[in-house]
Image 1 (tube, rainbow, N blue to C red):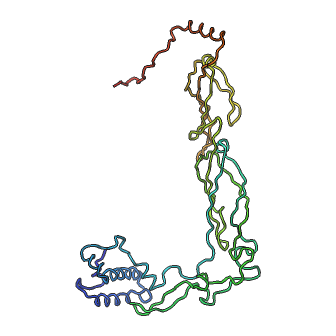
Image 2: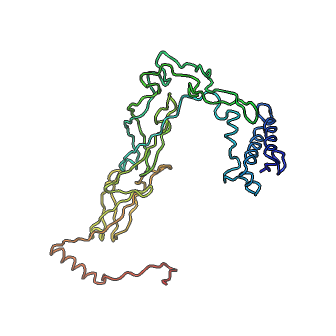
Length: 358
């Protein structure tokens, strides 16, 4: 950053009067109203900042000791306020009466099946809609906005003030019209001059398949209409998926548990199960064990951002009978005699081909 003393063209032991004199001279030369050079505004800001620092005893002492900004912020401290004061910074001309509408957050409860395949819903919401009487103009039908008598429709009041630069023009929003440039002389009775009214509105929702619990969907332009018929805000849908009695979700896959009686697991069986797609015949191989998993391709959830569907993962849970009559017990004893080598035993760890137990 340029040295403040060099910017003002003064020596490091310059007096307060010399600093003020140098600043006035440079500020008049760089005034945008008299200097058409494209870099005049930036140079004026540098001059202003140098003056701010050096005219203040504490800031100058800090600067002379090697600190560029005693406030620990950026080197542009104070530019905006002074420049806006001198040249009427901010918005020029009347500001728009229209304002963007508020966003809304709606909670949408879905079943797991609705989340998997997607669903269309129609809901009623209480929101702000365009006033049909004035069509957002805020004026009583048959009347119109009146140009402000104070600012002449400019929305700004300009006045001349004395400053270190001499006499300069400043601009401030007109208090009479609040900067709009026009006045609502006869406000609409229906909306009380707001251009919008509260009303119930029907909203059609198309929830895509594959949404998950906690997902937030944005519906652009479906929120409240803004003041004076301004653009609509957005609606955000907070998706909540209820737990299913049988199926669970794991990414794009669906999971469930199939209990198989011990004898069926040993001999193998075919089991009809009811899925979200309808009835499917599931083949359980002989000798099935608890924890075995059967994959049914393409019967999972629709993929939200891609084509296709996940899988249905069915985990086998072998069910051992707890209540046996005497005949059933005798049959199991006979089976145990036939398979006398199948004694209970502690299972050894499996370390693979290259594993080594430490």
